[in-house]
Length: 102
Image (cartoon, rainbow, N blue to C red):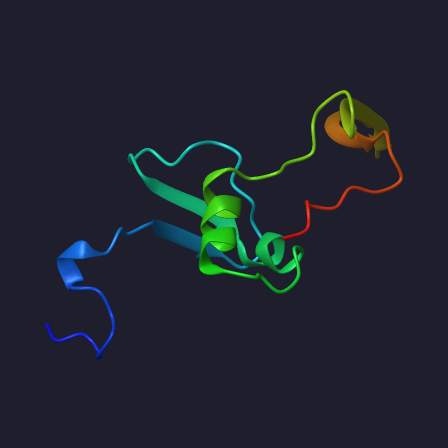
């Protein structure tokens, strides 16, 4: 495969494999080594990247909200007809959380 003039040889490129999703931010590791998953919305929340390395660092080491600092897991209890429903929910502790800027 011929690369454009001034580019490194194809075999000299350090590849990072990423799966992007429209709205889902996966919190569990992908079951394959060195493949990362993230949300396009999460990446866009950082603004315009300065470099490709900024994008790769954000994907491989995401800045995520922390339980106990930014949110807590609570329950919502409500009636649905004659049935009582108890549902897990995320309760925000702080007013807002944003990913670290580039």
